[in-house]
Image (cartoon, rainbow over all chains, first blue to last red):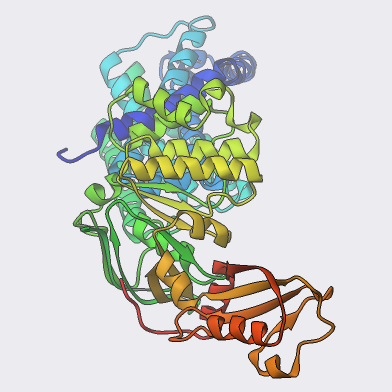
Length: 256
Length: 313
């Protein structure tokens, strides 16, 4: 990418990551505790009644779903807060008057948000090893899905942060849209377990494709073809990038 | 001097219909300090915001160092540093990291020696590891200046730089600005402190209702619009102004010991010599005379009250 202000990208990325590491305990502890609770509730309590799903122990079956849940929530909240906070504090002016454009600002903020989310997801994976035996069939694909999904949802979070005019608005999309989509996207069950009508409805949920592809990288099992999952995440990244480019070109909610 | 900023027919109309700038044209020369004066809502901050990239103009062009701010914005913005009116800083960040961050945004490689130099010049070096939220208002404003200088800009915009700072700190700021001028930085400042413009600026631009009413060298403006007052101190107090001098517009002080005479420096004859002669003719003995130039504030009020369309860049 000729003409990209790479020191500018690094400055934003480094600044965001520094904030993350400044509060490393809170950043990591909270998701780890949540995950342990999920394992206790879903793995031990419900898993006691469901021995296995398509040959995979239920406790292990939900690991990709839990990681996906975390990566989606963390990506969206990190990226949306990352860009909203300068808007709130007034420091956004720096990004608008310096020689950084939509590419640099997006790479810096989204890159940092995705990196944090991936880091937390990997910590959760490590935590899960204490509870269940998880074998990853395609580790490279697992990482690829993890990174691509983190990027896709960090881009979405970035758009939410650009759009939001208040902290309430910042919270409402993750709470009302993202979390329900993840819970209904097969994080804790296979779409095959649903009645045919609801299985059809579930397949309208874009998150299902991400969870499915991710679970395939673990167990070789998928609700939808892996290629479709990849296309879904690539499509999401492309649409979000186009939206962000439009926002910066028009100055919507950024410039007067 | 060559123009480092060329503004041509610049206009800005907000969606609400408010016309913030109307057909503003101005050349700003390299190395000069220009002060933009105007009442609240005159368009000063909008003008700065358009040049810096915060506001999208609805018409006209701006070139900074020959680079168009819209088509060649990266090159144009690298030349600019902005100190905004509102204090906006990351509250949980150290002072030195704030400056490093801004330098990075401008695409500059780390340069600890230069960062130290900037912080020292603004008396911030001792506070380099303090969180910005721990600083006083004046200190925060200095951090904003340090950030704006972090990439060695050729043009520095100071939007109300001394608003809310105490007199001593204001003096310090003026010294910083003077130092920058000596280093060749072009400075554009908006201010409500007319004394500030009078003290620092090479030229003064007056904006009102989005129109640039005029731009003049500060000294010329003072000479052109400035009235002077001659104060004549008397040896013996007067009970009243003598009838022979009643048509001169003189004002007698309450204690009767001085006379004030206002005159126009642009007039062919100021009337001073005639006045002093007539005082002697009336047997009024003079102890001393002094003159006072009207302040830029008075000049500004005159201009805003009687807008002129002519602009001399």
